[in-house]
Amino acid sequence: MRRTEGFSLIELLLVVAIILIITAIAVPSFLNSRMAANESAAVGALRSLNTAQISYNTTYATVGFASSLNALAGNCTGGTVPSSTNACLIDSVLQSGVKSGYTFTLQGVSGTPAANYQFIAKPVTTNLTGVRYFCSFEDAAVRFSMTAITTCDATVSEQQ
Image (tube, rainbow, N blue to C red):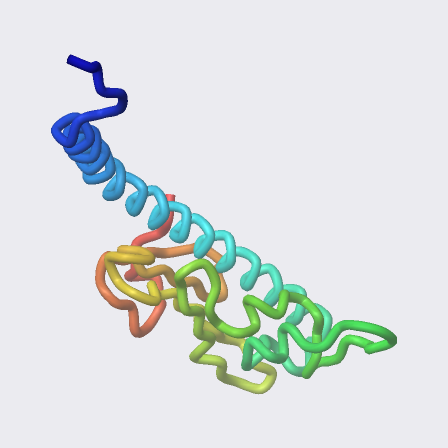
């Protein structure tokens, strides 16, 4: 009898089964680490937005806080001079309102000059891009909730 070279069908099926088992174990862990990274990025973005609002309020004291993400960003290339409608304080990705699996909204801007604002960050797809909701207002503390946030105030738990 001649000896055959190569793998048998059974051996190949066993290898494929082992790879599938390893993948089934690894994928949930990968998704959890991706959600944690998205949540960390959302907290960082909220801190950047708070810093931008404080800078904006200091620079344009007669206006107060910015009323839109567009006012905090703007086209900052060439000889463009920053203004209250084009402050050049945040990047264009954050200006769009969607970054790292989270949607950012600015609301509650009121007063003349504007003395109040609220940033709310919610996952684009709950339980896929993130599980926690984040918010911040004039005190610049980042707060979180496991349920959707509609209004950000001191009753929402602070991020530690």
